[in-house]
Image 1 (cartoon, one colour):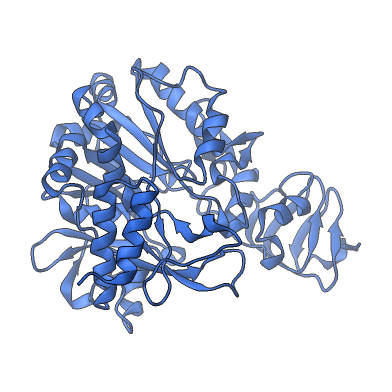
Image 2 (cartoon, rainbow, N blue to C red; image 1 turned 45 degrees about the horizontal axis):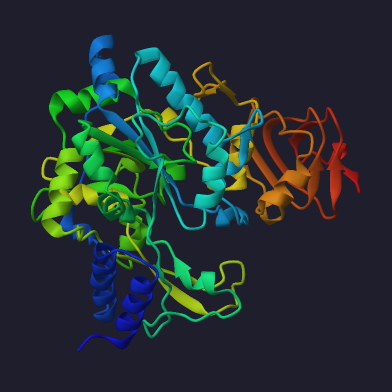
Length: 467
């Protein structure tokens, strides 16, 4: 007998127009929740991934680069609202640098590649029901973006948030909060049911390059595209060398039972094995979520399974109103697109430079990108102006919400080129032309102002004015 919560969920999804294939994926995960499945990956079931080809060893000529890019389609995940920064609109429309948003910069990166190599290089966005309208409005400023009448977007599915009894939650004050997107693993079934995957296959495109829109380092690298084309790799994940700051990031490993690559993130760690997961010598690389997938192989697999790839489930526990932690607890069923690596026989990882991983998940990272550490090149790539790693930035809880962050940097970001650490404990408004030098650790007991032209070193108390 079908679980009553599952039946109610499927009925709601059907009424909302969710495809049969997406409903089947949801039903599979709901059944796993019913049995208490955890989706964990024990350390003794995997081997560390250590032998990884390096992109720096790939040197394709211009013709091979052009040919590979001519068969490539870029897909940017654009379903996020930036809730980690207290936002309610698309994160992609946040101003990042020089008055331009993530969306603006990504589009200019693609335009630059098109012009240099003389290729069409389609750009596709996966929007959610929450980001679609605002994104399409912003795209009206780029009437030349579309090629071959290919669509500019696919729209992520929606599914009910579940109560602890695994039934759809009810929230009459705001019924939209009863729904959530199913994680970025939904990209595959959405490509299938939208008809876009079939269209790309018919048009002769070979690879999809997928990445997060808030990672401005994730450009369609022509050498990498040429390597994939030459090696005929069915699926590739970009990885970077792990540092101490990356201990919490997901990593790839080799499954002992069949030798396939698997993605293990925080949610898949067996209780008591976090030390293994965070050991950067044992697992020396991390997964960037920059992925390359052969279109024909993905199409073949999706058609064979009617869209149900069987990706590992993530049970994401939140509250029905993400802005109110006292609201009803819910479970959001999700999957990660990077976990598809275990589906493809012959899938590979490739080691890429840190420059291809510039995510902005918090206002700490936004401050780094806005600072003088980075500049935009003529091809709209972020170029670091310092040697070595970025400084560590911890602005504290006052700055977590984007609006509060913007209020405290009204005249621009401070200079961080000479900074190794910036910690702010308290409430400060930064003036124009502030420089941070060395290790800066400020404790402000009262709301204060850092005057224009100040140089902050150490505790920096001598330059702070109360407000």
